[in-house]
Structure formats: structure tokens, C-alpha cells
Length: 511
Picture (tube, rainbow, N blue to C red):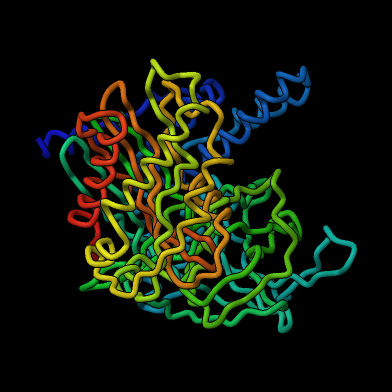
């Protein structure tokens, strides 16, 4: 059964549409093809599909407002987008292997020539030969900005603006690794992009006179090329830097889905310096740790020695993909939940809850008392002392009152309905922002997402988070069946069983 479920999961993750011109694809088809490209490690194609989705969204909006001139221009841009042919992909892979060998042999002239061939195959203008003058002036701003020359396009560099010098970041081709969990009635696979080692050899100290710089081919939107991400350090025996890529889930009770993981993305402001050069400034506070610019199948990474607070303005939302779950203040990683003694239990939060019970639809106000009862009985069946024992946290503290009452004002009005909604990490991240507490360290909360009375199954999620920054560290969805008892006692038994199953099957350090 486990094998068949896993095969089902993988087949669902890697299905794809028959190829047709991007301009003829619907938004839904483009989103599906982007998911396929991510799953198959076609990172250049992923960037192209991202650009196509952005153009298609704008084109559809222009059509709705009858701005047909704009729609026609966007359609033309869509038609100009091209994917790399399989033959060129093979050539690019071989060239990049040769580039690595040339760099290892310190034959940088050869590496530069090979890089130009790669850029030509990708349809980009090859990097310009370095000019005798090391800098040029920005023409896009009233205040003159001296732009340092860089050797390669599509490569992020650290920029010390006070000295007007650039520094290469650690360059890696990440390895895709997948962790699987198979249980009764469900299978889950999470894939990570990984690079060796827990720290980059490139160590930076940032201040207001430092940022990053990127050169692209004229007309290319840099936002479509890279994501800025804080690494997780995972692995007990051989720890390394991990960036979550996507999670695929197949459950008998909740169907199947594949989601791109972006909870550790950090918003970046892009400032255009001229037709090819852009300044990249991370928004907000960066804590000490490991970071990377990831895109086109490559990583440009660095280690930040101390925290840095950026004075950059918020990212331009018209030209910037941002994440409400951006982890740019957490000082914890997944393994810390097992080692940290400073842990606070926030109880059960029903704010994002859906109850599927056809005969009770429309009786939400009357049945709110059920939620209160489920919380009270769960506290008796899984008291703080017992939970501390299961988690091996003798110093576990509790701060439940505020969180467990949030559902009274935050649960959706029609929380009893047949529309089964898959709660996203982004929604959970936003919910954590409502927790009022003076506690510090690591927090744990149980979020019931679905009790399906009609099919007798549930979905719940255990969430560990950084209390100070309200940032998710790690989470685990639990799927299962109710006990089949009465409405109240049956779901309380399910909550207790889900907690035991989480502790027994999932509460363990990453290996």
C-alpha cells in the first residue's frame, strides 16, 4: 500500500500538458506547466513560465477593462517568449560542467568564453568584454551613481558602494533531495535544493553602503530570474544548507496536491541603474545566517556574520514577487525544535477551521460551543505535563488563553460548509501575527483545519514558530479518520490520536 501511494504521489507531481505556444496557453495551463518545470528541475523554463504568467495576468486584466491596445502589446511580448530546446539544454549542461573544470583550474579566460556560449544558447546577449574604464555612470537617476563593471550577466555580486567594488558570491549548482513520509492513507514528499556545508566560504558584513548588483540582458526583468532565500541547516549526521522547493501530498481523505515552497523567501527591492544593471536590496532585517540568490538552476550564496536592518523602501509590488511568509528574522532552524529548552505551548487555535457537516450548515453561531468543548476536553486528555513528557520538554511552558480564544472573532462566518479549503502556510503565517504574548524562544501550536463529519476524516497541522518574529520554523499536516463516535467525543479522540501520531512518526531530528 505504501508503495502504491508513493507511485501515485509521484505520478501526480510530474504530469504535464502537451506543449503549445505560450501565447495560446490559459493562465491555468501556464501555472501547471510552471509546476511541471519546477518538479523536473527545468529552472530556466521555470523563469520563462513565471514571466508568461505575469504577462498573461496583465493581459487578462487589460481585456476586462477593454484596454485592447495594452492587451495587444502584452500578447506580443508573450509571443516573444521562448523555451530552451532539449538539445540546447544538453549543450548548456555540458558547457557548465566545462566551466566548473575551467574555474577549478583557474583558467578564467576559458571559463569566460564558455559562459558566453551558454548565454547565447539561452537567448541572452553575451557578456560584454570588460572595458578599460572600470565604471560607468547611471543614466536612470538624477543623482549620478557610479556603476561598477561586472564580468557575467545573470550573476549576483556583492556591491560595496563606499569603495565601489564588487565581490563574487559562492557559486553552486544545487542538488535536489527528497524526503518522504508514508502513513496510513497518505503519502508526502518534500524536495529541497541543497548545497554542501553549513556555512558559505563567502562571509559578508553589510551596512547602509552595501547591497547587491546584477547585470542582465537588455529587456529582461530581473525579478523573474532570482529568489532571495534564507537557508535552513538540516541533517543530523551530515548537516547542509537546504532550501525547500515543493511538497507533494496524496491523501485518501483530502485528494492530492503539489505546492511550491516559498515560506523562507525574503522580499527584495530592485532599483534600475541602466538598461542592464540593477541594484538589489533585501527588505527589512536580515539576521545572522546563511543566504542565497536562487534562479536559473544556480545558487549565489553567502554567510552573514551579524544582523543587518535595511533602510530600503518596500518592494515595488508591480514588479516584485514578495512573500508574506518571508523568514528574515528567525534565528532558528528545524533541528532547534528538538534541542531548544525554551519552548512555549500555545494550545489549539481553531481560527482557520472548517467543519463539513451538511445537516448543520447555517448553524454556525449555535455550534460555536462545540469548539470550546473540543478545546476543553483536549486540554484534559493531553494536559501540559503529558505533552511535555511526550516531547521530552520538561521545561515546557504554556500561554494558551489568548490564542485559544482568537477563533471567537477570527473564524470565518460560514465555517460550517462543504467547500474543503486547504489551509496554506501563508495563511498560518498571517495568523501567527495575531498572537499576543510576552514569551520568547520557540512556540508550538496545533491548528485544526478540517473536521469532515460527512466523510469522517480530519486535517490538522502542528506548527513550530519563532515567537519573537512570528515566523514558521517547520510544520506538519496530519491526516486521519475520526473515531466514529458522537460529534464531540469522536473529534476529541481524533485530536488526541493525531497528537500521538505526530510525536511517534514525525517528531524527530532531520537526518
